[in-house]
Image (cartoon, rainbow, N blue to C red; front, side, top):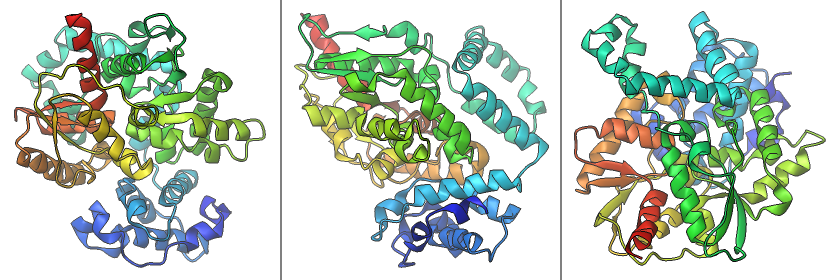
Length: 432
């Protein structure tokens, strides 16, 4: 029995083939081919579950052409759980090994099985990359045209390498931080630091901690946190995703925390599904459900407890906002990031056309499907430029990196709502 056959069949039957998902699907809009649409892919999955279709390389190519942006879930009147179908289909592809090649297997093993399963090794690799960048090794190699010797797909990836942060989250955030003055805080929360977020955007983790402190939350940040497992689940490695979910749950004292805070849209969408991911685990099923109730996106949490409005603004008058697909479609958090931005005195939010249309990052989609990713990025950059703002805020590390690459040299800065809020709070500290 394959994984799609093991699913509750009602999940596969939910799709009514009404077509309301079609105009929301970036790949269908690009090709106008039924197989490249959500309902087309669901039909393929159902055929596999019914034993009418074998899991083939062609089936694998179609499932990996999907962005997994979940815009179809927002549009669907029947409430189809496309995320579960999508991850199960990819899991069956990996189980059946129809997409295996030596190069693909090596990179998947190195990233999913090694680096992202061992947080200290990942940080050691990040430290080495930081040293390489600080000493100018990357610039020297570009100058002597070394990267031109690489295969084209690797050569094209090199300019997208993120700049590694000067310090990682464990160096910037203490294990326990309390708001001042030293009174009993209103809330006690855990802070997730992530993996890519930690390596490239540890400053945003620091900003998140400062915002929580300013809103009267005690912040608990466990050391050397693991990857949340979203990369693994989205790429068919469900057992590895379950192992990482157990590690995360064990890192936090759930009984004594009001919330677990995430500041990465893609991670947050997966983190809120631990209950389902572990529902067959006799020891972690109940813990997974408890975890799901506690996990809150930072903007969601601030809106829930009431954002303390800063006394000062920031050195910026206008900003536009790009929505992370998994924040708006996966977590249904749409108004709260806007509330955070609108809480900052003197800051005007200019709505971005197609703000919830995928930017093409989609986890590692810009690596596996560079051509389609580039088309989506070009579309997104055009809309950002149409707003005439000099700053775009987003709330996911993948989107942040993708937009920063697309906006190089265009005079538009990429930031995050929580960073702007932290800057506004700090202005009071400097003026007092």
